[in-house]
Image 1 (spheres, helix red, strand yellow):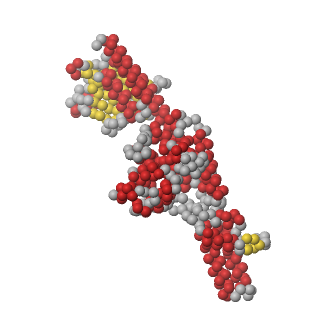
Image 2 (image 1 turned 120 degrees about the vertical axis):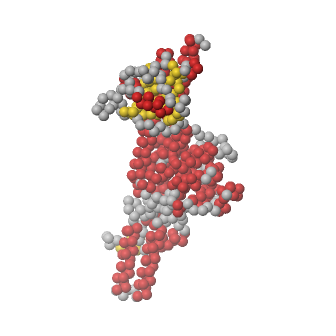
Image 3 (image 1 turned 180 degrees about the vertical axis):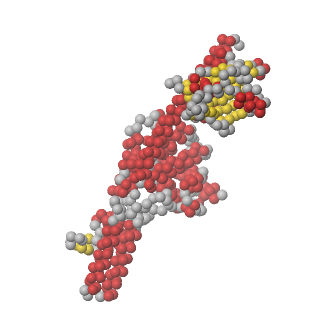
Amino acid sequence: MSSESEILARLETLNAIGVALSSERDLATLLERILEAARDFADADGGTLYLVEGDALRFEVLRNDSLGFFMGGRHGQPITFPAIPMHREDGSANDSMVVVHAALTGRTVNIADAYDAEGFDFSGTRAFDARTGYRSQSFLTVPMKDHDGHVIGVLQLINAKGRGGAIRPFDAAIEQLVESLASQAAIALNNRRLVDQLETLFEALINLINTAIDEKSPYTGGHCERVPALTTLLADAVARTTVGPLAEFTMDEADRYELKIAGLLHDCGKITTPVHVVDKATKLQTLYDRIGLVDTRFEVLLRDAEIAHLRGELDAAAYQARVAQLRADRETVRTANTGGEFLGDDRIAELKRIAAYRWRGPDGTERDFLDADELGNLCIRRGTLNEAERGIINHHIVMTIRMLEALPWPKHLRNVPEYAGGHHERMDGKGYPRGLTREQMSVQARVMGIADIFEALTAADRPYKPGKTLSESLTILGRMKLDHHVDPDLFDVFLRERVYLEYARRFLPPEQIDEVDWSKIPGVSPELAAELSR
């Protein structure tokens, strides 16, 4: 091959490397590729890539074929060497070391033989050679400068190999090519860092929103952390699945990051939800629990009964019966106030009877024992929220979608609003806010729906309920599968891949992780039950 054709081939390789470096997303892999490309260019036996960190050069990647060193980067062994300070304790430059000199001056240093070099301290190199039997000879040390001309790293190659493996100096043509490569590499590295910094800033802003929600309601903060984790676990399980309707579903790292961001933001609309609604622990709670007011009224009725007895208006038996009834009624109200899974018609009838008691208020007028708002709240059949409050809670997803759709998402995150905004939809189209059906939703949005429900069932930090055990939670989730609330295929993957158990071991206390009788879990086929029982 002629010299001209060889140069053209190297230039083509240089261009190809530049394109490859600019497309690499992983920083550790990028650093590896930079060093390996430089070694290939120069046919160097070894090399090291350093990054500037403060006032020091940190070892990032180290390779040496003769010594079998394969350290740093994405695939190498960890590097334990301390960073090289660029200034001494007295503030003077530590430029007797060639890599520091290149970093401080921004100039390439090409040394034909380290043992004959003047002006640099190679005593450490000679000591290393004495220990290993290696002969460090030619050195090419190239600073890596960003677009502003700042040195961000140093690329050092050792022992260029000639014909027959003999060590030779790095010639001028190779030096120019490595300098060009170092320049491209520095720009690619700087761009990767900028992207990483922007992603870090973006996630920090998301965490800032979640922290604000957490400050409003500590119960929501844990939810905002756990749902993304469970979403990722289930999505990865679906991606591993090779059989069934979801066998074609795949995710790359960009897809995972997009889903992670959607998970972190899925409840961002709750920043607009009033705290007293989010944290409503009892049915009578507004800014405070009004059960204290009702207790006071019972005390008024009890004293009225005592006064009537003392006046002779009630005999002893009637008085004792009246006191017993009032105390039983007070316990009925207290129990109803705590909420629960279901309040039956008989309990509602009791509450209406109690509400009809008459008592005299502070202004001297008689009134119903419970006003319409208090009675309405106590008669809530499930949980602690009335219809108006449930509407306020449900509105958070509308605000989530509105807030997310207002953002100028880049291409690789354009699905975040759809993923985050679909976790309250149902497979039969009876969910909210858009009433989407299963066919209208992405797999990722359906995954987040299951994650949101299962986290809520098992969460032990809610003010209105204790966390359910695994068996209780899976029973409810199974009913929701049969009720067309959650995706049936995802439900099966959730169980078959034992995502529920991996999540439980990470986030649930031991007392909630009970044995599951799969024959009693709704929606589980006999075949799947047998597989899970093994």
